[in-house]
Length: 474
Image (cartoon, rainbow, N blue to C red; front, side):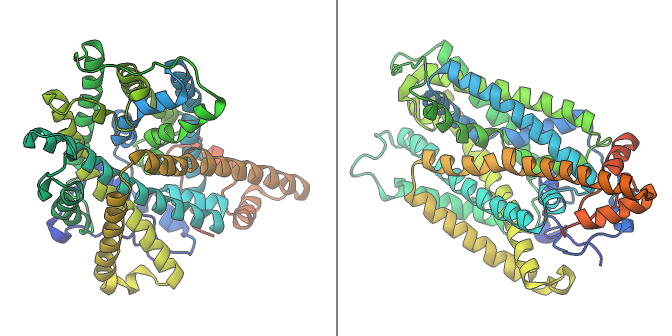
């Protein structure tokens, strides 16, 4: 059966033929449950990647950096100071990079091109479905966080424009937080979320990068040359307990989580080799670490234990440089929400069609109706929750825990299953003295993953070796 990806039809709603690197890379997997044939898995059918090594570094950095950097000063405060925060980040970075390399290894071994598909092929149906549900919940929670960030920054900007304290009694109804968030969401986010494709992603990526670096620069500058009215709270020098250090982990996981989009980035490279990919992700994580550490250290030392979960809320509303940073963050979030919704909607669509047993090509006529309904339900639920959960710290703690699953749990399960498969296949191959090609095919069918010898052949031969058979979901 021909492979048809959800949300892969171009041109609807006048979208650009080039929907941008990151939007394309975050496409949903195919919903077919049958294994791919060798012809469909061949490199001739999939095409060769076009992303250079430098381009891959940029995309991974772009996928990693985002509005999550606003929470890093609070994470340093929670962890117990600069030393504890830096040590925690450095320790977690080892596992973060290892997880990215493991995913590339398993992607090349199983010949799958997205995070979900790799987990399906390597770990089986149950873990694959669990992974897709986790992705849907994670993207849903992140959309809620984005709406809360919009409200937080708008409160500060409106306070300056209205020349009155935030939340002051007797304020006009049109300055109310719930109204401003709802108006912004209906005017900008909802229209950008309905289309099947995201044609503006290349501009969103640029805004996101510029905004992130500008916010970091402002926080560092404000620490070096602080305003007179800014007085720091207590500067912690050691954690109160080990529990306090671990409480900072969700924020760091949320900030560094780029694993879901890493598998498509790896497969989009001109030379998708695990060794090259190791250098790519190491360089990307070092860049992200520099940004997050600069923001976390300087933001924490500026305000101490009194820092807000969103560090920009700790600065005076009248500061124009910080106001520009708030505007950058709002623009970045406005364009990032539809991307996260796009990914979550694709997973929900795939789960629904798989549950119904509907091949995509037989259900195209109802796709638009389903898409609009899914978008409206997703949008209204995230908006309502954002209006009544104004504390972004609570949302980050939940979605940060889910981000840890993408960084630690699923890559770990993939590695364990891959190694167990290698151990199991070696025993019958030696005892039965089967020819390599016959034993490989037999074991691939029974274990749901390509053999170790095929893995090594793939790594030595380069991208998408024709001898590797894409297995798809079991």
